[in-house]
Length: 586
Figure 1 (tube, one colour):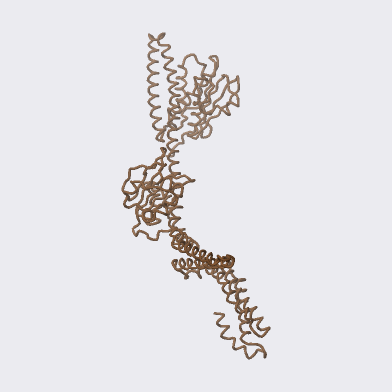
Figure 2: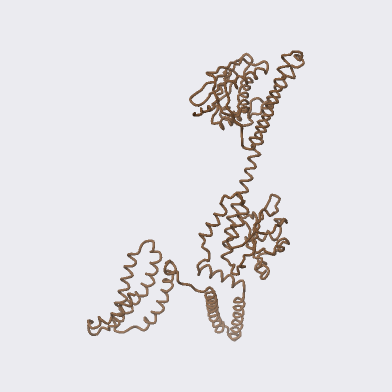
């Protein structure tokens, strides 16, 4: 608009010019200076976020008018326009056109209305490339003719004919034409996908927490929606190196397996290639060039099958996805669809690998919990077996004593009850649940002390409770087992002439059980590095080394803990902390 105004009003300044000055040259010179000033102001006052596009526009247009300034200044100086400079003006303008084109492509408002047909660009590029090729061949033929001597004409004819044959072969090569289409589409046109929306939708489908649709099925749906496929099937690799169908969506079931050493699997794994079954039928050469393979029978029998895509993670194929034909058959399926599907499949592979690893870890943890609880059960059974063994060893001597018989029956009943509770607790722990109840700690400790005194020739055990009704909420049998085990350890470490002192008292919101013996004691290094580790014991083959570890694990789950103080030759003090049961407000 500014340029039109300047052209229209240049004639108003002609009468004011001195004699001998061409008014037309003066007008063009003033126009060039004015445009350069406007471009300078435009560049100076442009926001920083728009400088990325505007600077190329100013550079391109400024180059054109800077040359005009030089051209018309030189013409005014010598009173005529130099013919060489005038002929060069068109070339200078042509050189600046790509710079202005970059500015237009960068500016979101300037480039929105510009569109070139991909077919036009493709054929134009092909003809341009052919013309450049023939031009080079022409120079080559001229060189051959001039320096070929007597055979120059023949050599030129053979050279030109061979070059034209090669050009024709190249122009009719489907592989070359396909690569040229991909090159043009990638570098000269906007993408047909809104990748931000596609990626957000894809991640949302994969990461959505929907228990009704498992992750393998959601993975099929997320990939299929990219190309509007109505169904699909997922195959995953298992430990026996066989790919099995693990999920399907709107496709008929397939029960065949596929070994990982087949040509079909190796082709996808080595090339990371999306197999288009339609293209495989009418143009198999595209695939044969990368390696020979044949389609499995189960895949040929799937009438709706269209695409087969590998799930690659860290250069290993975890599985593959088979998609059904889109409703519109998508005849324009091209490199952009392939690239997007490859990226989506890699992302889906990482989700599926993480999902399977989480499942395997969960199963391993459940087996680990079961094994740990089984070990604890064996430990408690060992204690009960020791009690029953003591009864058997004294049976011959005291079998006619009614008090002994009553004690035997009571001990057997108590052992049977404990074993039943152990089995119940084992099932509860595997299921992730545990029965708790309010426990009177003073009564529980007295009962366990009485049970330990029945073990026979033991050290003297003294127990004191600071007060009655000290209540904690825990699993009764587990807590009883912990207290019994600590008392038994004190008995094993203390000679018969020694003493064991058990005290119970409260401290703020915790109950504290102190079990102190006058036994052999432990050194600091053993307490720090070995006492609370599983399967560490000082009892040799008679101990399993999990009692103290189990005690601390149990107390910490309740919100308590265990402390140990010991000195070699003087004894050991175990201090058990248990949270008190909070009184309920009326």
